[in-house]
Image 1 (tube, rainbow, N blue to C red):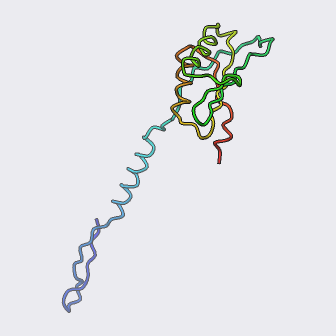
Image 2 (image 1 turned 90 degrees about the vertical axis):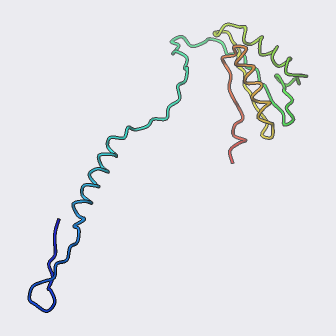
Image 3 (image 1 turned 30 degrees about the vertical axis):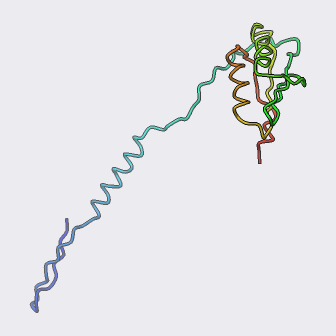
Length: 145
């Protein structure tokens, strides 16, 4: 700490001015801030995915692809044919899910931009529940502005 001494009432002696020297305080605070920044661990936002193992032998035939369109009113179309209710959707997905993973057909889900999310979630949940492993969303470019 430092102390400035000034003149006192008319004499040649300076008055005593007591000010706190803040420079060492600022230096200590900066060192503590740098230490805090260094010791904070880097947070990695990662999502664990179950990726399939690499296959050295690629398949010789093209996979069967079923296109599931979900219209704006929630109507589900399986390869262009309208399905009357959710039970019909689940029966079609059960046929796909009963095949072994190697021979399983792909299910491409293409929702309309205006469809309620609940209709899409119901189809995806049914596919997951019925062991459909090869499923994907297509037509996502309609959602980009």
